Every structure is written in C-alpha cells, then in structure tokens.
Length: 340
Image (cartoon, rainbow, N blue to C red; front, side):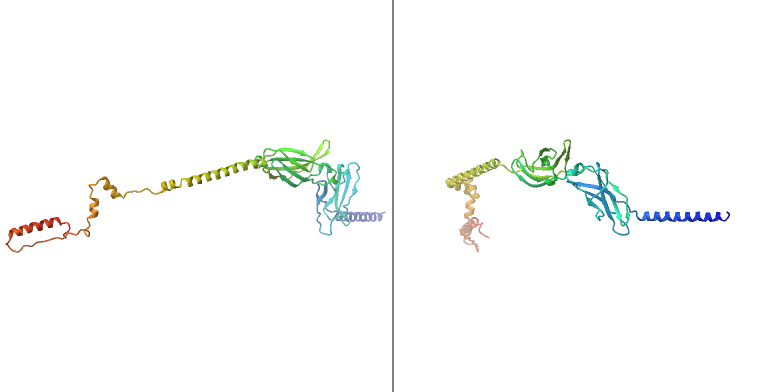
C-alpha cells in the first residue's frame, strides 16, 4: 500500500501533463486556422445591378479566397452562389425580376487553405426598394420658338421589366427660382408654351411605380440649358421696320440730291466768299480828309525836286542879292523836306 500511493500520484501527474499539452496544441491549431473577418461588407445596387463588396483581408502568407452565401426571408437556409472561393472582393448578386421583391440576406467569409474567418452578414436587402435609379440620358434637344423637343433613353433596358415615367423640371435661366414640372411616360416629349429667344434649363428624373403605394424616384440629371429661336412672325416684324427705314433713307437721299442739282447755282453763289473793300480804302471813303492817298502818291522817285543854294560874295548888288537870297530862301523852305 505505501508503494501504490506514489505510483498513483505519478500517473495522475502524467495525465495532467498530457491534458495540458493537448489543450495547448488544440488552441494553437485553432488560432492557426482562424483568419480575420472581412470588413466594410456592403451591398451596392444601381439600376438593379447589385454587388456585394468588402475590404480585402491581408495576411502574411498565401492568397486569401472568399465565399458568399445567401438566404431569403422565406427560407431560412444558407445557400451557395456563383461566388465560392473567389479572389475578387466583390460578388454580383443581381436578381431576376421575380426575385427583386424578395428579402435577401448575404454573408461572406475569408478562406486560406484549411483556415477560415467568421461569417459577416449584411442587413436585409430588397432590390426593388434599395436600388438607386440613375438619371436618363438626354440624346437630343430640338429648339423652336415656343418649345423644346427632348429625346431621352431610360437608365436601364427593357429587360428590367419596368415602364418608367419622367419627371421634368424646367425654368428660365434668368429666374432660376421659378420652376415648372411635368410628368411624361414617353421617351420623346416636348416642353411647350415657352418664350422666344429665352434660355431655358431642365433636369429629368425617372419615376418607377413599384407598388400601388411605392414609387422609386431616380437621381436628377445634370441641368442642361437651351435657347429658344425666333418665330417667322417675329422675323417679319423685325424686317419690316428695317425695310421701311432703308426705303425712307433712299427716298430722302434721292430728293436731297435732286434739290442740290436744281439749285446748284444759288448754292454756289451763297458758298462763295464775300467781296470786301481793303481797309485803307474803306477808311478813306468814310473820311476823305485823311491824306491817305496823297501819302501813297508822294514817292521821292516819282516826283523829284531840285534844291538851289545861292552864295553871295562881296557887298555889291545888295538889292539883287537880297532878291536872290529871298528866292533861294523860298526855294529852300518849299523843298525843305527833300534837302538833306
């Protein structure tokens, strides 16, 4: 008995050791086989084309693959899709026309060999309710004096199984706060009752009637602006005053030229410079006492005068000398102005 007690203790210790080693190996294997779960798992749906997208899982070894499952609200069973062990980080989950009204749940996980990650599930998704409808494409716009003829293409083809309507908003570019709206069902429609020579802008949205009480309103298109043209009546109204003005101008010009030619002599007479009397003649006529003409006639070279000087020697013949002296003096006085 005393020998069995130490032996039993040894056996118990060995069992405890193996149990500890097994648990450590199991935990190590489990941590080795577990991968990080994908993040940012979201469903993007545009014009009923739906994609499940997620962020890539990054590890230091190997190539990570991904698997996507789905289930509906009616059957609570996960099923595989066409996205099993794929390398892409997105999966096309577009549904047929019948399945667009189903409530669908999606999940995705990462895989690397025997290692996997946890499943990441999405919120419930209904394509008819949660898809985003894009704007229609404007193919052509034809301007007239009072309307715009617009042709559009729907954002999805006829295989989508819907017949969209178009919600059109338009306004004058100068008064963008005033908008008018119309709803049409054709891809070719006309905006009427517009002003001439006015710039109008418009934006179009698609309206889908999914249920009697549910409508999907699409994204509005980028506003486009076009100017209306001039009507024929307005053109005629513009041309009439111009033609009348031209005819009136030609008529007045013709009449004016005729009068100029008819009265050319009188015009020539009136445009000649006036005859004027020289100023010195005019002064003489006003006051004849002014010796203006005499001064003009008294030129030394025209009427020269001789000067005579008599010199007397001695006392004899005093009388005759006196007379000669008087004559000489008189001559000297008369011609004093010419002697120098």
